[in-house]
Length: 470
Image 1 (cartoon, one colour):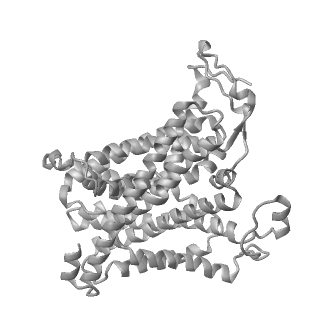
Image 2 (cartoon, rainbow, N blue to C red):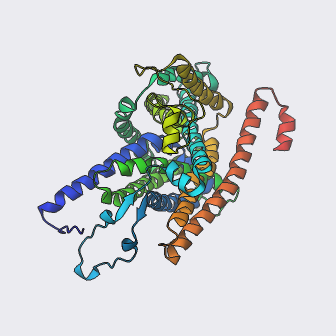
Image 3 (tube, rainbow, N blue to C red):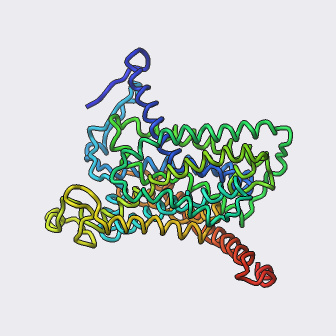
């Protein structure tokens, strides 16, 4: 079946409208999940210089490409599709969607077909849970940073503010669906864009104080991998793309939506990182809003960001809860025999988290609260926002966004890929491995130094001994 679309006229309006609608949905999802973390991009420019700005563009393009090929792995192709001839001379838009069959529904399904159900599904589930829970931890760390920057004279340290923030989030343990949480996504995205624009406008008022000579031109092999980790983490959205593409009415709009949203994100991130660093230069902090000059402006912006961080926490938290429940426990209407009949991997425990009326069991609520407390414990233990984000981006970010999509694509589509597609995938895999090795080494090293300084200041380490070691 071949569809023909005119290039002009009223009939094209629904196509443009649907594309814009899909782009708006993707942007709202992107900003609500990872948009909070652009506040560390000026620090990334401080660490990586012009190379960090170039990386924001390069990583955006690579992640849009890997997102596209990851969704391509959801489909199997008929033999007649492999040998089709494009009618180039007609200059008409052609749709071949009828020749493809969607045989997989998620990232986990792809990994299961490549590495087997137990190993593949387990690996991706672990990586996705680490990514989601670390995002929750970063929200708590960010709340602590913003509270300390807004109310430095209150007598509460970072850990105390983090605990108070976590207490507000305990009701998340009772969430049973994402309907309420998802309704906040667009609102969160709009609020965050407004806050970022306020910061950008303030930075533009200091344009005469900018010094482009402060941006490092040389490639610093020690600090640049930290910048790359931060940048990669900000683009990690591949775990949501299969379900997003599956829910689209017109799936032919997925690829342009993906490229446009990543282009918009890259342009905004470059602008925000550049003007933020140029305004405060070597005084740029890990969270840029703590650089705002007047305490009144800082409080207004930080409190709004705190509210947004608290409203954003339930999305990755509930997504992690769903993954854990699916892999560890039975659904409310399941039994083990249904898994054996479907030849699917049974859960670890033969229990359901829900009562017959759909309410959560008491022990399930306790487990959910325990998960929240786990994120709190790590947020208190590792209160360094930028370095922690760089470490996460260097591990799970590169695996989920760069290395695994290319590897899966090479494995599942090896008969249909041409040589330059295979070369591109291999190059991205090598690039991802380099980021992983260098990023983990440098960010963990800087994180260890920062934690050592914290312990020395608290009196748990000898300051002179620590300074000699550093």
